[in-house]
Length: 565
Image (cartoon, rainbow, N blue to C red; front, side, top):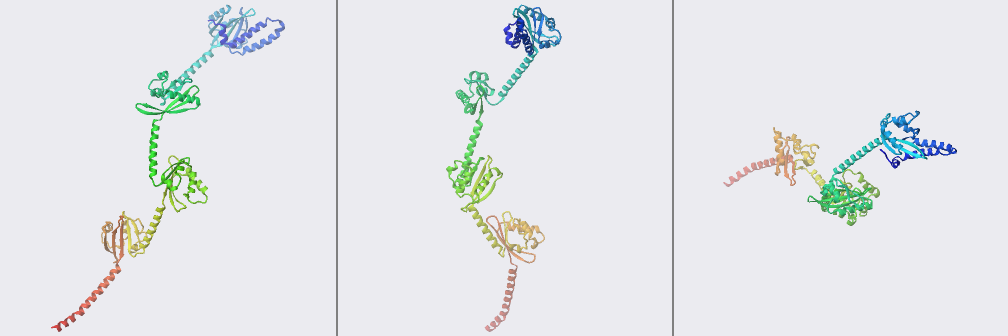
């Protein structure tokens, strides 16, 4: 097989350079003797340069006399460096001697050849090139050896790399097709589609090949808008996005289309924002409903976001704090609101306001659970304040004017204390039980009447325990439980009644039961022992006097009767 010298020059430029250097050596040999010394110097230099070549070379004359070779030539053929090297040694070094011999015959006809041969000793695959060179009427044969094993190895590695790249490319395409988002690429210039994944084709309603062939848009009728978005991305050198609407299976869909500049063209993808937009609309309606409810509440509400700016307030907050509603709609910071409240005298009077303000601002980072305080204002108004962490970050403030409630509570407590003190000064025993038969009120007179200890008069005790504590003073006969049940029934049946109880020591107690309108039971006890004794004594004396009068009046009536007769 032959090849032109130009082919060799293109494939093996380094080796041709060395060959030219060798030819120059031959030409220098024809010069005069005064240049021999310089020629030897150049010869040494050229041989050193030739030894640096990776490919091996050797030259012979037309009579097959050996002129020289490189160490790499001997190494490829497996011939020792110190051994004499002949043309025959070169021939027998190859398995395909006949092929090489045909190539040498071509050289003699001033041709060239290129063969792929196998070296006997090393079993290497080498590329053998033969060149017939004529210089200054001198003919030489030059053989170049190139290790073909390296080429095959490199070719094998290259094929493996190509296969690996193809495998990764196929894997990448499969990966992109598996993503449930439309993805595409636009080529530069006309911005036509040169790639799209399967999801894009499914949304467009055609196959991938037709999408690329017809440059089909993702959303029908949006081709111009899509290309303009891609053009803007390339022009601005920044990602661009736009909202586009479509009808898919009879339902309206919302898409957020993105275009991002790439090394060549743009990469785009689309997000289905239908659910998020629907959820956002529902959330906005709910928020509007909550705002309407907040405005109807009498409790003042102010919500500060995580950035410590006012996020929401209701009408009660404006009225209670006396703030400018237009200014509040600018959503000022928490610190600015505190300053304004201070000017309006809607904050407690403090010695160091800056420290108070710093403490209030620190609640945004330190408050974990809700807390409740009473805030006393300079105008004698008292506000109940609830501060709670907001679920979305920030704090929730609730204010309620409890001035009237505290005043009423204070008056009520005073009245209760007066009533209690009055009841304690009564000689009658008084006890009040709630609707669940728990002791709510008992005075000292009641305890004295029934010989009760302070523990027996503990509020909250059940009426059964109350009756049990006076068991030792009652004459209940043989069946205590029956007597106890009868007493409890008479004291809680909500039927007004009065009666008398006899204690074991002959102490007589009058009682009265009065059901109250709130479901409670009022009982009064009076020790009438002395009264009964006095009454009995008086009645006895009265009867005795009556008897005396009757005795004295009998003779008088008799005398008068005789006189009449």
